[in-house]
Image 1 (tube, rainbow, N blue to C red):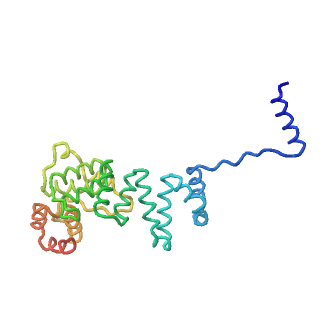
Image 2 (image 1 turned 90 degrees about the vertical axis):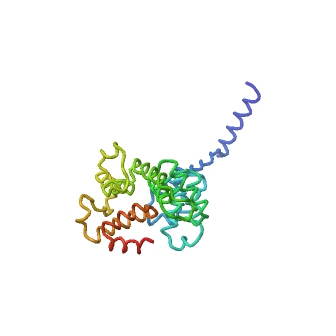
Image 3 (image 1 turned 30 degrees about the vertical axis):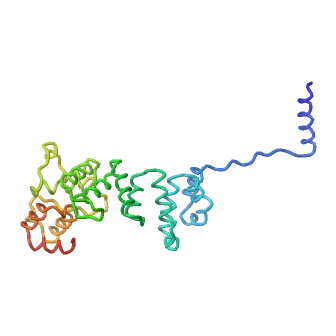
Length: 259
C-alpha cells in the first residue's frame, strides 16, 4: 500500500474513533431563493423578514426583489420618508431595464428633467404603450422639456402607442377621426378603434363615451371628452377650434380646468 493512501485511511480511522466528522458548510441561498422565501410569507410576517430575506435578495442583484423593496417601502409610511424608496426603484430600473419600472421612476422619483426624460425615452424605445403615449403628449403640447410641439411626431407616437394597445391612444385616434380633426390611413379607417379601446381598458376604468353623435352627449360627458383631448393635444389649434365650434361654453369650462 502506498504511504499516502495509508495515511488517509489512518486519518479516517482516527477521526471515526474520536467521533470527529467533517460537516459541509450550509450553502448560501441564492437571491432568487431569498426572494421566493420572502414572497411565500404571509403579509403579516414579511416586515420582520425584510432585511433577512428581501433586502439581501435585492442587494444580490435580483430585480424583482428591488421592485418589491420599493413597493414595501411605499406601503410603509415611516420608511417612505427616507430615500430608500427612490433608491430601490431607480436601481431596479437601471439593473433590469424593465419599461414599466422605468416609467415608475419617471413618475415617482425626484430627478432632473433631463434624467426623467431619459427614463421616458428608454421605456418608449421598448415600444411600451404608456411611455409612447406620454412622449406623444409632450410633443403635442407645451412642456417642461423645451421641446417644440411637433404635430407629426406626436401623431406618429400616438399611432405607435395604439399599436401597443394603449387605451388612451386608441381613444384619441377614434376621436380625431369622428371629429374630422386628422385624416386616418385607409387601414386605420377599417379599424374599430372604440371597440379596441373598450377592450384595452382596465376592468375598473370608466370608459369615455362613444362619439357616434357628439351632439347627444350631456354636458358632463362632453367636458370629459374635451379635457381628454385638450390634455393630450392642447397646443394644436385645429383641435381647439373644432372643439370650440361644437360647444363653446363647454370648451371654455374645460380650458379653465386644463390650462
